[in-house]
Image 1 (spheres, one colour):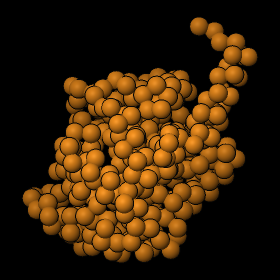
Image 2 (cartoon, rainbow, N blue to C red):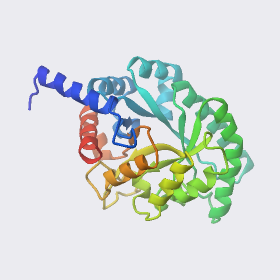
Image 3 (spheres, helix red, strand yellow):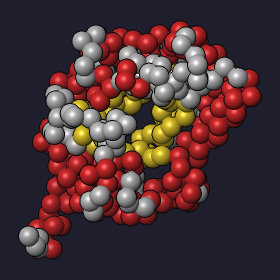
Length: 302
């Protein structure tokens, strides 16, 4: 269907008002929509900035690899000129190695991630903790190694105006990607450090199944620990490898309004970032996929 220029401009103006300037629902500003770069990874950084500007999307979550390729300073200029807020940088972490050399390398990489986050102008660096090293079955020991690493990294990040945001991942990722599987476990780690240094990520894809998660959101809110709020739907059957199973909003099992309202009630007033890893979405025109995601956000979250 062909859309007239006048209709398109009217639609974009409406989207700009809704996604960039909305104060959100009563009790919170979480209606502010941010698109995570990985959701529309087929768009280059300049294409993403242009699409966000034309659709009225005011926030963007960036990933390190494309930022490194484009250049940290160039990325900062690009998003600034487009009027975008960088809501997070993904990702640091993978801090569970027991080998001393591997641990040193991980700490160095995390310091570089902190510098990149500061360079692109975000105060939130998402941290995925890492899985079990080969042959290791000690989940508790792996989590303690994360705490040891945070003790080194959190002050470094704070000096640069960056907060580390621990993201718990669904338990299916515990062996190879993230030994922190629940908000409670993430908070147990974060609360060892000042709230302005270490917070947590509330991601619906990873926590929707957990009947203890709502109370943990309250706990995080009381402590000022909610650093980021991310959305993706849970769709089955999961694809091979499971990593790319995050679904478009409204295609799966998650009640987004419930989680949105719970996070808002806990005092979170930041951006709501849609982060989807999905090959079918990546195979489409990127601007079309972004526009659809914004529309799904309006329909299923607001």
